[in-house]
Length: 280
Image (cartoon, one colour):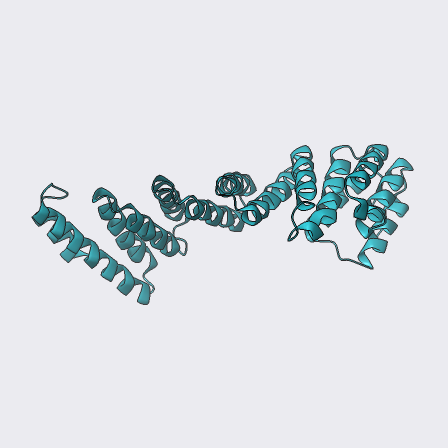
């Protein structure tokens, strides 16, 4: 680190000229070497600082791809000790990758940032980053990656109480899956989650859910008679009767065939509160 800084000072910082550029490139190599040594010693913050310095030098020298790579390495080190600096480096890396036309790689930085926010329990920020990643993956025509991000957007939206947004996303993903051979099998599952969100947004209107079920039967003939269709129908009927026992039985019956996720149970619990006490 000291050797690299000395080279930069000798060159007058980032002055123009071939000799200055050579010195700055040498300094960059020394910073990277120091960063790797700090990594080996598990000195994560020092390693992150060294990679960040190398990234800054490369950026000023118009070596943008190399700069972005160093920002990513810095983020990996900072993640272990300094989440804020990790965020800053991921954002810089995404900006630089986007600037050089590497949209897929830029999107991956937003995805990594979203997962970091998830680990911190900051679901709103995670949701925002998943949406940014989804938008960028869409621009790159990467359907599978887009779907993965949008599923997270939908789930976090519902968890945060925005059931309408969640329902819309799940329903759109279900319908889109019908036209994709690789994703077709997920259509009914997405409709089921859309149905749960539909009921959560208006937990006293089972008829509205039953109407949606009929609409999805028309859209996807295979939905009719599926376990997801039967499950939603039973839930809607239980709500119409204000019957908490029937609601619980619908859940038990479905789980005897296919286990529900923690997310499903959390949303269903919120719906059940409007029917009466939880008898399970």
